[in-house]
Image 1: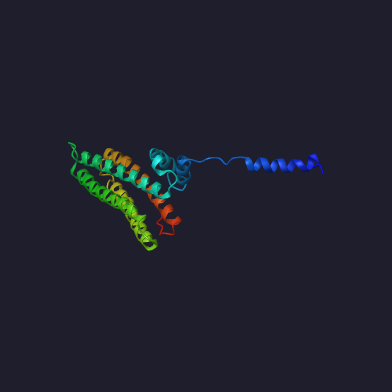
Image 2: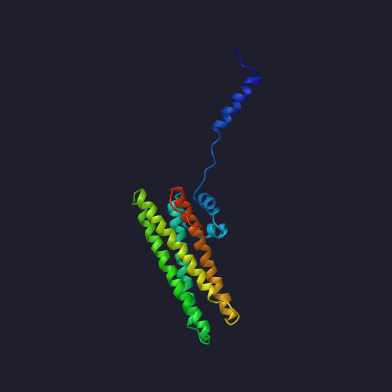
Length: 200
């Protein structure tokens, strides 16, 4: 029995739809999709794009790279503020705020470094170990974010140098933004694995 043109058409359409290849997605698509869940998605994509080859499509590597970005920014900002504290003509109250900021940022660097080392232990742990390590990571990254905020708060008030306040704030806020993104991606990784989640 010969099929009519009307009955043959749906068969052709079905075969065509099945043969149509699915769009291929690469590491950058993976990064963009996950960065959409962060508070600063454009900064997230920009800062992590250089790690695309290492990240591929691994949520763990994505979180690890985000922590590495945050640590690098924190170290750079700490050195910058320390240099400002040694500049000539800095008033005592401004110098004290700068030194407090250096101390806070030093704590932030330490906690972010711990977080990265702890992430390295995650894959070698069982279920209970995973939750323990991720809880540590999330706690330390959250504390690092608080350290960064405390640094900026130290320059509040009309008695402080407006120039130093704006200069330090610009650098530290950038660190806080990448740290917030890192915490969001760490949370996302932990949540997918059933871990504990902190809100950035």
